[in-house]
Length: 307
Image 1: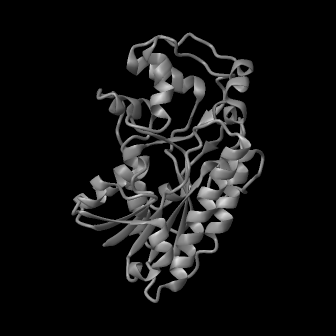
Image 2 (image 1 turned 180 degrees about the vertical axis):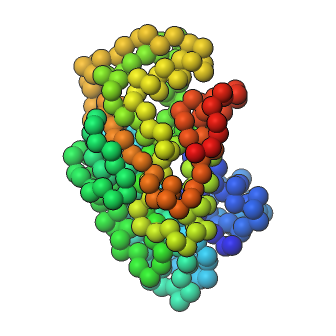
């Protein structure tokens, strides 16, 4: 297949691209800037967003487009940052949409990244793809706007991938979560009752591939594992696998002044179930938190490695 990966140099994209290369697919990466090292890579074609916008016909006949682009939420949300977060998502989705309008031979499928924040937060509700979207805070508002623009993508099979916390050792939230434990200062954050919906990076890559290759899959898809946990349980699992104490409590009153509105990501959560993936037969290599952490730390888990 001829696949375009927008944001292919980011955390998820940098794992997805080699996965598809090993399967023999032809990859084009859309990125903000093409550096010298990228120009010398013969296996991948690189184009910029500006080039895609000005010359959409170069994507004529591609089989799939995956758009993972967007500024990271892992930063303090000033007014300027919020505008950048919104603009980065709206602009890239608009370029994809307008590019498709110019193509005579459109791709069969477009996978557009979204976020599980679209459901809002709750300590006692469970959300799947049939749950209503709720605007409760900045992340949920951002996700709703993101999906509203994605709905402008017409005449293709559209998948809105509602991404949970992606656990990988090289980037993302996992290194930040494990750092206190590695320094012997791990423990409960806030109440510890907040839900953490997550997915191992390998399962994230496999799920994107599954969505692209299976024509029956469309619409919202929760990119999470079937085993969400409360934060206290996550901490206990980290403590067990890393052989570090789980004792230090950071109360909400200390987190909010430091992180501002970003604290909502740590202190609130949602229990998200990947019902659509399960209904279509997707299986997880790492369905439990302990099996995922053990793999990321290069250790064996006593738990089964399938859903």
